[in-house]
Each structure stands twice: as C-alpha cells, then as structure tokens.
Length: 421
Image 1 (cartoon, helix red, strand yellow):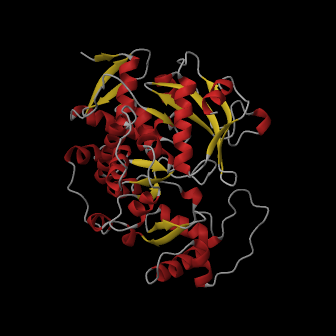
Image 2 (cartoon, rainbow, N blue to C red):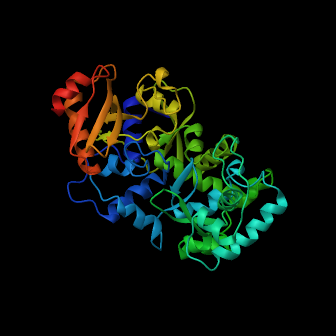
Image 3 (cartoon, rainbow, N blue to C red):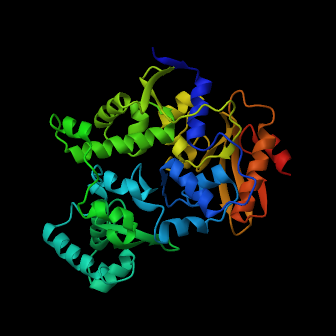
C-alpha cells in the first residue's frame, strides 16, 4: 500500500533535504560546515549576475548565515578540491565524484566549438592542449595571447560573441578534457587540463579505469541504446538528485542535473526496485511521487532564509508552486515596464512557507542594501515584516553594507520600512 503524505509533510521533507528546515548554527561557520552543506546540496549553480552577490555565494548564506566567502575559493580552487565546475543544472559547482557520470550525459555543444570550421577547431585544440599541459591555469584571453591566434570578430553576431579560442576552450570543457581551476576577479574561468583539476581519487575514472560494473544496469543495457556505464551513471545521478530533494517526481529528479526525463524514469524504476526510492502520494499532487529512503520528516520547519533566484530549492518552478503555492518567475530578461515584482527578486522563506518576496540590490558605493520592492504573499503571518527586516540586516552585515533602505514599492514595504528604520 502506498504511503500518503500531507502537503505540509512534503514541504518539511523537502526543506530538510535542502538544509533549510532548521535554525542556522550559532557558532562561527568554518570550511567543514560549508563543505557539508555543499555535499548535501550536491551542486550549486553559478551565474555571473552580481546584483546582490554572485549567485553561488547566496545558497550558503541562506543555510548558514554570515560566513567567509573566501571558503568557497578554497574548496573549489585548492587541491584536493571538494567542488569543481562543470555543466549540471546549468553551469555549476559539482561534487567531483559526479564529474565522470555527468560527462557521460552532458550535451551542451551549443556553448562550445561545434559550429567552428573543423580544421580551425582541430588546430586550436592541439595548440591549446599543448599550452595547458605545461602552464599554470589561464583565462581564454591569456590562452589566445599565448598561442598568438588573431581573428576578425563579427560585431553583428547575436549572443556572447565569443572568440574562436573561447569557443574551443568551452568545447573542451563540455567534453571534460579541460576544466576550470578557478575564476579571476572578473569572473573569467582559468582553464587547465581536467586531470589537474580533479582530485587524485577521481582521476582513475577519467583514465578509463571505470567503477565496478552495475549488474542491473548491464542487464538494462542489452535493451537500450546506452551502455551499462551510462545507465549506472544515470542511476547514481538520479539517486543523488532524489537525496537532495527528499521527495519528488521524475521531473524533479531529472531537472536537478538536467538529465533526459525518459531515461531518468528508467533509473527511478530501478531505484524503486532496490528500495532506495519508495512510491508515495502527496495530497494535491497528481504525478507519481517518490520518497528517498534517507529522507526525514522534521516535526517543524524553523528555518528563515532569503533564497537566490538560482537556489536549488527553486530550480524547478512547477515543483515550487506545488510545494509552496508560490508562483515565481525570474524577470531579469523582462523589459522593466513589464516586470511585476522587479529585476532581482528573492523569495523569503519563513518556517515551512514562502511568505514574501523582495527585489534587492547591493549599493556597494553607498554602503546600502536597497529593497526596491517588498511584497507579501497571501496569508503571510503578522511577523513577516519583522522577520524579514532581521534577515535583511543579517544579509547587509554579511555583504559589508552599513544599512538597509526600503523604497516605497509593494504592499509590504511600509511595514518593512518601519522595522528597518
């Protein structure tokens, strides 16, 4: 008989799995705590938007509060790395043990060199790999200068308008030949051979000494277009996604690492057979839903957090709406006159509910955290403004800003302004 869960229970499971159900640690945050949080999330999305802070810093603030952002540079840039860059949900920091599995399933050729002239691409790849084999990590501009490549860029080209060298580097990155050793202050990748980026324990996989064969995957491979290695990799990635979700649908699990849904469904079925996932029903949910064997249901969710638009809790918008009755859209690319809430809007989580949203901007020159809009959700509790004011004050201190300034936009802004005064 399928277990039945309430929507409240599903929320608490999801929040606990994402590290958002409890209160933040009272003691100073150290590298081990940041590492544990990252291991729990499995990945953190990277994005260049810096309106409040770089997006990969925010999930750790949401879960841990005031912490030293340089810890991430250490975890991602100092061997043996606890996190590394690769394609996952989007460009992300991933756990190194997921790299080989993701490499088998990623197909982001549009970002790289697939459209380049093959002769040019092969020539550039040869020069780039020879250079990186005997150099420190280099940015695309440094690589271009070192190999002496000149080209006439098309100023009318839509998109990033990358150079041929940058496209070739990104093609090598997508294929898992080249990795990102670190980022510079301009947020540019510093490229190196991936063998120099991966921790030693994971290099054997890249050199062809794969993990022990997975017999169920090998059996499935006989009836599939994929190899047993690919199917075993899919199983591991879906299990990791399910662990990070606690509870979810095939769509939820597949979206976490941006995996094909049909193949993810086969892995979900396999994980059900193994007892790692259990089918459950959630009040109000129509799609088949699964509970991870390690998931826990806390009695109460006590967390409080401002969530980045790129936070893993809000990746899958349909899941977000079903769990929290919260419709969310990132309006960065929406013309200003058509935006409903603002340019960079963060949901505000209080307990087990998302109770408000705020459009934020860090005015670094003025030393202010600007609240350009504050909007309460229907049924938001009476203490929403007070709790949000405390959270904004904590964020301002973390960002090194002196004050929080609330502009008159949104139904919550008057009460919030009074609390922040």
